[in-house]
Length: 61
Image 1 (cartoon, rainbow, N blue to C red):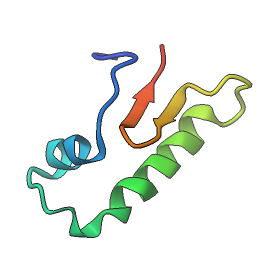
Image 2 (cartoon, rainbow, N blue to C red; image 1 turned 30 degrees about the vertical axis):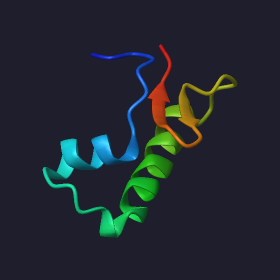
Image 3 (spheres, helix red, strand yellow; image 1 turned 45 degrees about the vertical axis):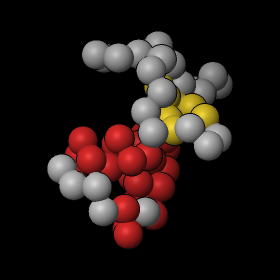
């Protein structure tokens, strides 16, 4: 993991992955984050995938 515990905002994630800043499809990030959370956290007591309300997302190492 390159940047553990770093919080990334939704727009930063969108621009980094899709290389443009049109967030008209803003639920795309939510859907992908839900799927990642399910894969990363499923079966673990302590959740590694965190949502920082109003800021973004973080994976704690």
